Length: 239
Image 1: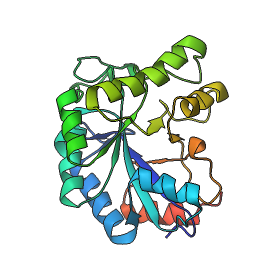
Image 2: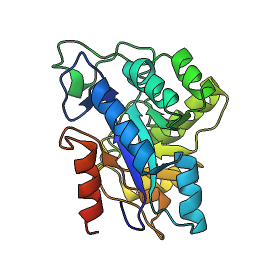
Image 3: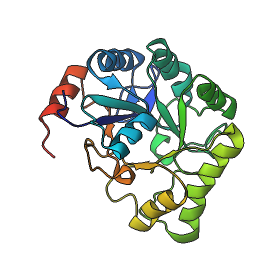
């Protein structure tokens, strides 16, 4: 469906108590997309996706599922659907949000706060076979900060996960995910910190030669009304 290209998709919330929006999909919509992915793509872990990319193996038909931020519904709603369908996924978490009541600015107007996973719940995801990735410590805009603060956010999130989970995260997703939301100096910091990839969230697909530290992701927000629309638009996009 995507020629010789591979796809990484990004979700944020899977929640039936919040209206669908740019960050939220209902459990029904998420289940529908997951079943479509399973039937029409080679759904692989982000680890395997990067291995294929680095080894020059074709990414044709490959799709990796990811989540950003660490919302509670990732554990309560999304993970059971993924587990039931035997679909791998990477959960990128903001380490200093976990187990807190922090309300980020983009959620301030929500009538009901979705909440964050606890560290025990993140450990449970790890134990179920899901991958946990880093998404900074406080969701800072790496296109705006540099130097010591950026170093702390990048390396600190990696160390937080290593300390709390007993495993070293391999993948990093930079907050906000836009083209301008990461400085080149900070992209290099993710490489120097020991990550195997640095992923965006502004659309696009990967093919042979794609830099794993410039890995594009497609956010699965409500502008994709159906899985079929998603597949059609991805397959007809020229890059």
